[in-house]
Length: 186
Image 1: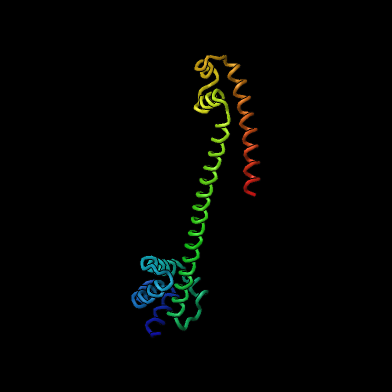
Image 2: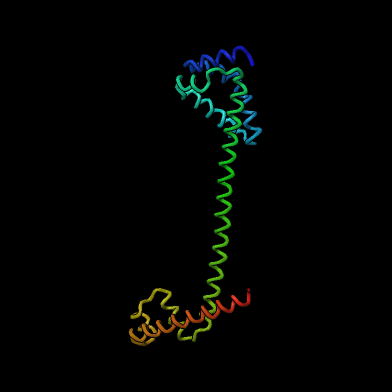
């Protein structure tokens, strides 16, 4: 610890921001090397140290005097602050990584589950008669009851009744297959 560092720090604490510039010139690279040690990222290390000096400049002199009434080793203080800021950065990064990993895994599980549901529904549809299947396909394509009736030459009311019966049959098939799958798996 040099006399220059102690004098520059004391002037800074007493309100002279340009004295912090002198300290910056002397110690910046050492602080960056310490930050690189923790972050393994030179660009992030420089950002962390630069943000430290910006936050020091923004601190008003009264708070400076209150926080650091008497510092004997400025370099040790700044190295400790850099270490803490690096550890905070690493915690935040690890948290973001964990959240992304969980979201990614959930997306894969959701896709797998959706795929299983589609297969199960296809099996139910295959159990329907050809007429029921055609009726449901037209309905699922977005045709209304009147349009379906015109296409297959039956009344709108008959379409409504047949769709209702077909839905009930699909629901019954769904439950039967679900029970079967449950017993086979467990």
